[in-house]
Every structure is written in structure tokens, then in C-alpha cells.
Image (cartoon, rainbow, N blue to C red; front, side, top):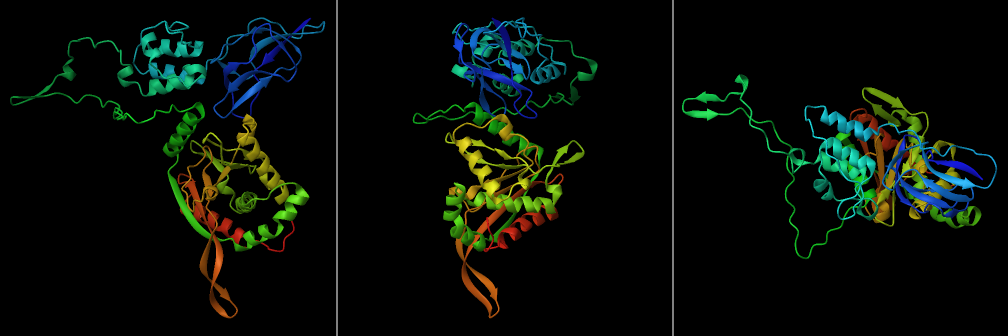
Length: 452
């Protein structure tokens, strides 16, 4: 018999840790190669970890809701064979998570907190992971206070995101904060006396309390799922980070529409793929990025990072109603057929929850097709750390004035609005406006006689 170590797999750039959502196998269970062993979640996507070989699960080194660093050993599997491939000893303590560092930073600002031991499980059987208990201890959160935090994890468990969100919105460092002790006033803190009135020094401004929510008898309360919480946090962060400006252009896409209508049946017959307007729009965006490469950037403090690759994110709605943005890596290396296959593959895997963390990482520019839902305009929010995003509206037939050799005429044309939101810290109106105009130019100049 041999023992092998199962480690937390690498899940794309910038992903350093993952949370164990659920163990699908128990100690002593027989497993087959490629059979899913556990479910994990990152701040980008949920996925499953398969067994590397046939064998028996003999040890689990982490529990559900534990946060594990990429590369750490999470389980020991016993397999057939005579060579011991790895030790079954407990792994070394993981580096302190960045979330804990943030908590310690808050504590260092002069708020001394008492060490509060939090049990592994509450009286009601609610489980708390070591990370959650450690954060609660550092922040002085009592067991009773922790019990009142609404959990978004499996079976309502409190996750790292839940407790950090609670700490951020915690009034006066907790509802059960100890009573303030009476101290002798220092000379500099004495009240000012004006005539017979006593005017106290203004107290420090407290964080604005949330307005009470009125809930009616017929109202339904729906708890946000984990993905919806992450989307909400990401959108708020983007609006706080980037001053958004949006420019609009109406493009005459009659040639593009006519060409697609002419070739779509032949395209599907030859390539086995349906061709939508999305790859045609992405093709135009890629061309425009090559013309204006300073749209394809990110901001790092006072540095501008000009990206060497053109990786186009395409926002996709999931059956759950949530949003995800799979990425076409090196989109400029594909022809129209290749872009179409990439778009269809990512969209299908998004709908079936088959995307990997790497599929949704590394984007440098994003497009969202709001026209899918019949919307003619949109003001999209930038997908950080990118600096721009484009929304394509519905294509609508409109009467329009066109120039001909015989003079101006009114004709029915296919029109589409393009909305371009950009980060005004680094993209000014000239660049942002010229870019969306260039995309419209490429769409309007579409060659109706082109091959695919």
C-alpha cells in the first residue's frame, strides 16, 4: 500500500486560497480516479476537486468552511502499490490569511479587545471553522454575538466573508460592547464655558447607522446566495474605486445584420456552430483595442499597467439569475470562426456551471450584450481591475437618412446603441469617446461579401 497527498489545486492567476464547501467522501470511503472528492469555492467560482488515483480516503486534514492555501495538503489517499509517495503527517500551519491581517490592522488602531474563546459549535449545533473562531476571538465577538450572524455557507454556516462583513458593519464594535468606564477628564478635554451655557467638545463622528427596514406581512425574505453577495461587493467596490463616465454611439449595423442572415445556415452546417452577433461585436472591439491600446490597461496606485494580451470578458447571465464573466484569452489570435466557437463554448459551460476558475480570470476588457434582454441602452459597471466595459444594445429597425448618389434619402436601417463606461482616472473623454466610435465604425463598415 502507498499513501499520496491530495493538495489544493492551482485555480488560475491571482487565486491564492479556496474554501472547502463540502466533503463528498468520508474517511474510509473507496474512491475512483477522477471521482469528485470535495467541493471548493474561491472568490471567483465554485468547483470540484477530483481524486488523482483509485484508492481509499484515510484522512481529511481540513473541515468544511476551512480556508486552505493553494498547494496545501487537504487529504491523504491510500492506493495500491509499494512506494510511499508522500508523508501523511499534518501539514505545516498555513500562512496567515490576508483577512486576518486586515482584522489585526483594525485592532492595532487603538481598540484593545478581550480574548474571547469561541466554541467549535454553538449550543444549537452551529459549526464554526477555525478561521471564523480566530477572527471572532481577535475582534472580541462573543459566542452569543456570533450565533446571531447570518451564515451564507453550507447549512447556514458562517464563512470568512460573513464575519468580515459583520465586523465592517458592526455598530460600536458589537452590540454587546462593555460599558464605558468613567475616567477623569484631562485638561484638554474640559468643556468650554460660555456665559451660563456649557458647550462640550464634539464627539467623534460615528458610522452612519443603517435605516430600519420595514417588512410587511406579505413580503418574502430571500437570503442572498454566496455568488450574489460577491457580485454585490464587487460592484460596490468598482463604483468606489473608479469614477465612471459613459459615452454613447448609435451604430448602423445593417450590413452586419444582412451578412449574418445570409450566412448563418451555411455557417452552422459547415462549422456545427450557431453564429450570433456577440463574436462579431467582439471582433470589432479587438480591432479597436489594437488602434487604442491604452484602453487595455489596469491601474496599480499611480502606475498604469499596459496589458500585453487582449483578453475579452463576456458577461453571461446564469440560470440562477446571477452573473459571471468568462474570458476569451488572446482574442486577437482567433478568426471569426474561432471567436464564435469560443463564445459558444464559454456560454454553454457557464449555463451548465462547468467553468473553471481559470476561465473567468485574466480579463483585460469586458463586453456585455444587454440587447439580449431587449434593452437598447445600458450603463455598465467596470469589471475591476479593468478600466473599461462596453454594452451592446438591442438591434432595432429605424427610419434613417442615408446619403446616395441621387441625394439624401430615408430608408429602414438596423441600428444599435453602444455604451462605453470607462475609468476617468486614466481614460479621458477623448480616448473613451474615440474608442467607442471606432468600434461603431468597424461594425458599420462590415463587408457584406466577406467569407467566414
